[in-house]
Image: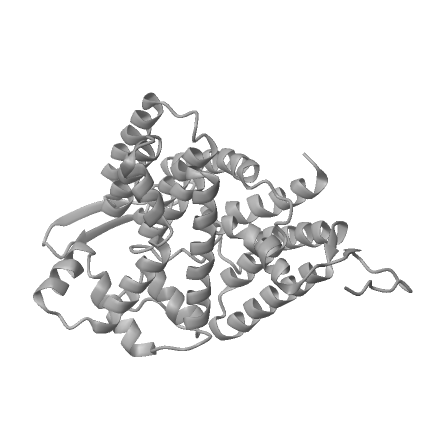
Amino acid sequence: MDNNFKLYLMAFVLFFAGNILQLDEKSTIYMIFALCSLICLIIKLWNETHTQREIITDIVVVGFALLLYTNSKAMTILMLAAFLVASKNIDIKKLLKYTFYCAVVLYIAIIISSQLGIRQNIHIQITRMTGQVAERYGLGFEHPNQLHMYYFIIVLMGIYVYYEKLTWRSLIVVQIINCILYKFSVSRTGMLSVVGLSIVYLIFRQRDYLNKKISKLAAWAFPLCAFVCIFLSKIYTGNVIEVIINKLLQGRVSNSHYFMGKYGDSLFGRNFTSSNKSLILDNSYVILWLKFGILFTVILCILYYIAVKKMIKQGDRAALLCVLMFACYGITEGFLSNIFRNFSLLFLANIICNDMPALIGKGIPVKLPLRAGRKMVQE
């Protein structure tokens, strides 16, 4: 394990820990985590050799992120840009392997601490649109949905890391834990997502016609989900079919329609609150469209399409599975722009670090930092 990988790993794990521990972004601990992570990324970039085209690419990516941040005031876009431009020569699978270990330990620790009274065990009573009353518990997380959401993320991360080594016994254990957690979270989205994840994984492990068809369709998963969600949120009128879809999604379509009508379209996004006293916007694609704008949403869809096409060509079904599952999960949750939850964003690193610089032109290696009196080699 070289020093640059250690620096990137430390930076990523610190932010991941801050996310799963649900630290307040303004808290002292979170600020210390953020500062340490930033220092690690800067040192990594400082130690590496970069071409001029890579430097130009990094400037464009970070500059675009800064532009979006000025409108959205969302730190996630800056974190996304920082970790993508710093991901050169990083083994993503190895990174996620260590992050997986960390995630499992933290997840268990949070649940235990809630039972010991160290963390609050949130209790929520809700009445669903069907009239059913549900008792829900967070077990140390801020919301019961997040209890199951992080379980889904951890399971998906584990499947990605150990894709070729999983057995039926492992999947059965995953589903037993899934059922136990559902008794507390009552998160149908989380529970069904973990079940669906196991089913799709088993299909992907079979070299048959259905596997090939799903693999080819996966390239359109993210763009298609984005189009359908945004389109439905715009045209929602309350007709019979739309009402049925809305009920199945627990009011997410009508909620998205409200926020879409209130804030409208913009090229570079805006700063807005995705909840009020009675409505919550938890559809990632509508959030991307409103918070970060039309341009970023379209670019992200294109990047995912290109990345998945490469995965299909390389036969990387483990990464393909991650993209497909996150694309579907994003319909009912709003975290797809967060690289520490939606780790499939790391798969875009190859495009940012290799393909984009190649579009600029052939580069000449330049060692950073540029010392005093040392001239930068021109391409």
